[in-house]
Length: 120
Image 1 (cartoon, rainbow, N blue to C red):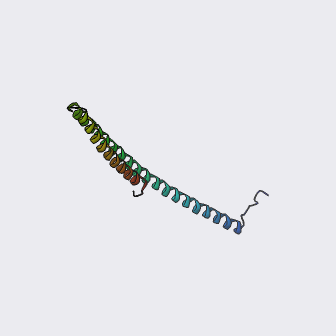
Image 2: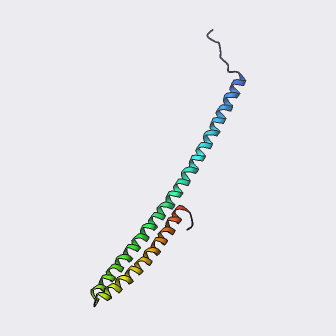
Image 3: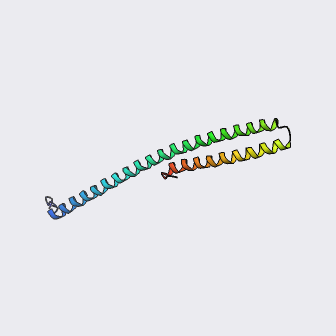
């Protein structure tokens, strides 16, 4: 009994080899899909990061422009001769600021659209 050998039948061995081959093929497919997903995510993250940086720079540019406009308005008010001139300056300032804010909102909207891959 000591020299009894156990032999795996050929059909069983063949079935096991096919199972291992199929499992490897499935795993290789999973790895390829995962690598593709990671690559896509990295690309999207870089695009969003660049877009966010651009939006931040744009917002800073607008803030600087708006602060400068406020100081310019304050200087004009200091030199106003009467209430009528103050009212005219205020109306002009409100009109120009509304136009500037409208344009800034449009530019920020376009920047956001670039970040999401859509056109505005």
